[in-house]
Image 1 (cartoon, rainbow, N blue to C red):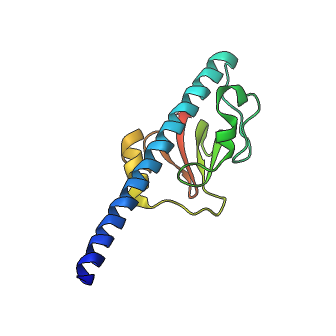
Image 2: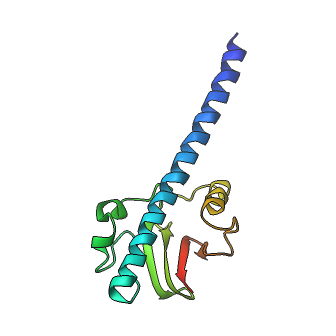
Image 3: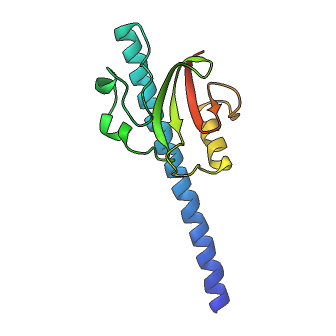
Length: 141
């Protein structure tokens, strides 16, 4: 009886962990899409892209295009929201910088996320690694 309960508990905990990962992935993708729409609106209004700022800091002039309070909090995957402008070989990119010591999500979760957002390859496409701790959506090469 105890063995059966242990097996059932491990199954339930596994399913719970998977559901949590799915929720994190969906929440991150939703936030990213909202911020990308904000960057597009910023570009239409200013004819430039949001400037770079420190990770977790809303770029100057970008505050009215995003939920600034949410931007300042860690992303659903950990790390901090960030914008790169004319850096890392791209003109403009928006994503997450995992420099805050919160750890990095599993490779499996990140690959699932990339299949949702882009092409399923984190080394290519528009959603990709710019550096070992920077996972960004490239707005303009």
